[in-house]
Amino acid sequence: MTLRSVLNWMALGLVRLVGRQQAQTQSEPDPLDGSVAASGAIEFCGQSLDLKTTKVNCQLAQVTDLSPLSGLTGLTYLDLTGTQVTDLSPLSGLTGLTALHGLNHTKAAPADVDALRQALPNCDIQF
Image 1: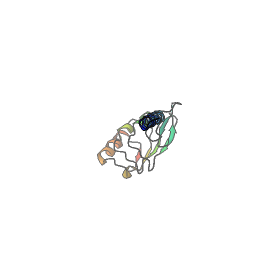
Image 2: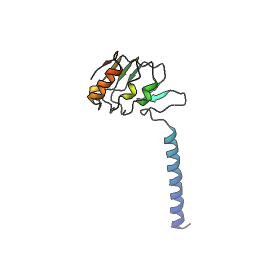
Image 3: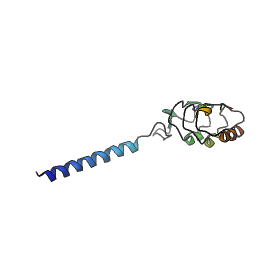
Image 4: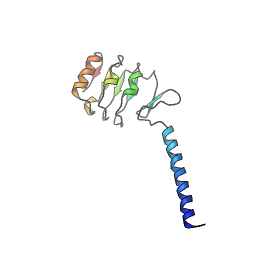
């Protein structure tokens, strides 16, 4: 076997290995990004959430997108302390939300917080 044959064989094996790892990575939901698991639950902030979820604590999680929470109509408490959230609009339809904590420790703009207060007048929004 020549050196060239050995190198080609090794390169082919590496390509197959990398392809296999990428396929596995793409099929596994990221527990922080709001991917939908096979059970229909939403994986968000390292938690499995469903429509019955009432409390979500995302303190210090690497969360930027709240849109996966927009369908959780039973949600009453949410803590976003230390997250990278900027867009609060996905929460505006959660009329059952009664406590939203930690917005002062996010990247949310004061104007967006005020708009959310208008949309959710019964929610204690700490900013």
